[in-house]
Image 1 (cartoon, rainbow, N blue to C red):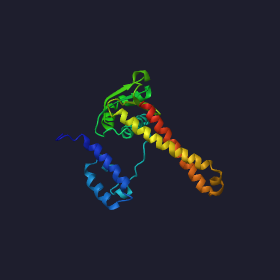
Image 2 (tube, helix red, strand yellow):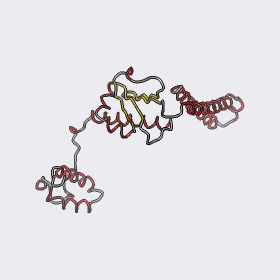
Image 3 (cartoon, helix red, strand yellow):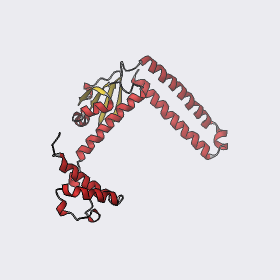
Image 4 (spheres, rainbow, N blue to C red):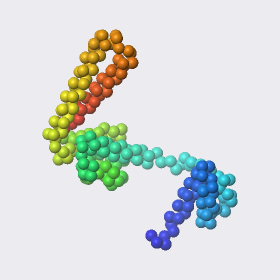
Length: 224
């Protein structure tokens, strides 16, 4: 607000620390800015006249907040999980979706940040519940996270029949690829005549194809 000087000391303290941190890399610019800040800083009389000999900032371990960091990490996991589901299911990026945050620890982290979480993940309404029984279990996609679960009801977000058909086609293609690689690797002539690095590469391709097939089957099972 106009005339409100309350934030000024905090801003000057932050800028003072930034100038000290940047000084080894930008000595002339930071020295000039620091000198101009000197008349405004409350502790200017306790500092040397030049930034080059001023004390370098030292981290204050007492100010670290492990709980806040865990909460932020949980919120980031929630947002990432919801965005991944939206992308995988081809839900329009601007569309609001319904979601559940499930689990006691997850609920504790989500309740205080529900508004920001909803905006970042485009979720409305967002339900934060302690017990799995409080969230739907049919026609949903679930992401299991270290701190809890994210459950998104899929009904009405897209054409379920079309999505099932799309996934089934991908499963058929992935199955054919897995079978082709298995036959190739089962061929004794190929295994004995091909260089070891070629065989290893085909084995790696089989593992990748198998993982993709399992993922597609899980995705289809979720909406079946």
